[in-house]
Amino acid sequence: MSYSVVELDKKYADGSLTPKQVIGECLDSIEALDPVVGAWQAVYAEEARAAAEIATADIASGRRKGPFHGVPFALKDIVEVEGKLTAAGCAEWKDRRSVVTAEVAKRLIDSGGILVGKTKTVEFAFGGWGTNQRMGTPHNPWDEDVARVPGGSSSGSGAAVASGMVPCAIGTDTGGSVRLPAAFCGIVGLKTTEGLLPTEGIVPLSHTLDTPGPIARSVADAALMYDAMSTEKLNVDLSAGIPGIRIGSLSDAERVGVDPEQLDAYDRSLDQLADLGADIVQFQPTKTFEEMKEAAAVILTAEGYFHHGALMDDPESLVDENVRSRFVAGAAISSAQYVGALLQRDSDRRSFSLAIQNIDALVMPTTPMLPLPVSEADEQSTPARFTRAINYLSMCATSVPSGVSSQGLPTSLQVACVGGNESVCLQISAAYERVRGDMPMPPLFVKP
Image (tube, rainbow, N blue to C red):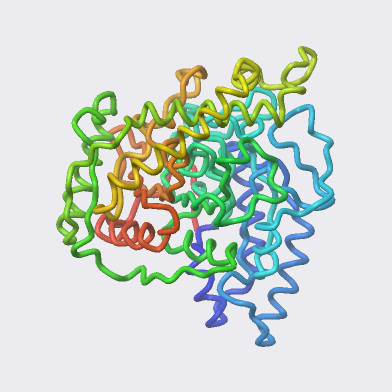
């Protein structure tokens, strides 16, 4: 299903395509490709076809609800839908049926979106590589032969969108879980500002840091999906330029340990942004990204253990053992350490706000590395070095593809802004996307 969200909006408007046709193509794509990719936890084929019939009739009768009407989308399987199974990537929960529908899912459905199904996730969203021992790890669409990490925790959403099985999906981001799969799968992810979109009806990992957000194949698609999820629409012209925008780049110290091809793509991106009129200045954060990553880990681990510790403490429970080890570490975090981490976060946010007050955005690689083979991913570490700090600082950010490496793997660029500045973030990202040019499609992509 090769259409973008923006293309569907235009084709529905001019009558050259109907939701019934699109859902048929979407389901055919899933049937053809998901046996290889393994992105889906559940597919709601009958319900999707029925919704498409209604949307087709409504649009034909002039009752179109807006640009998201008739657009297929997927939900990460920690997002509740009343009456549907929500396992949250946990084998112990495989028969758990939801009694509520998440507010963000309601909004997409009320906007006329057609829910196609649920996508796989790292268990309880606690992991950046995208792996799941018991419920399955999606295959990164950029390598047909080697099973590479799809990025997590919204692994299935990233793989489903990148492979063309669905044009967009909801992910959630506690420390990078929208941006990491977007980066590793060569697509776009928007990490929204904390508290901007509701988390009601989403299985929590860290109630302080969790944020839902769109995963799509372009900045414009992500913006359109965001508008369907939010009560306050974006006020942004994605076609606008960025002359005079002040962008902070990585310090020399922060470049250490980043894959050389990722750095090459990053430097090329900085040159392209400068050519667009942006003012690039090297930025020295008040704390290193690694320090902020570890500070965030205290909060999310303590809160994660609060929500899921009882299950993880049970040695008989059918859980991913890598995830279990992350959760049980929360038992050793005292209440004093937890409260201290929250207070330190407030202090760090104030210090960072002063340091960044003359800068419109920070730009860095989304991940230090390219997508690794699953067999080489160190489950005791995380690819979230540059992403977790954004949650810690209550910022918003996009991950945008920045090219393809010599191995044919996607590189990525993260654009981060002070919280509430999604419009600026998307404007910069769209300007960069235009000058970057078209990305190739991954080998595992549904051809039109």
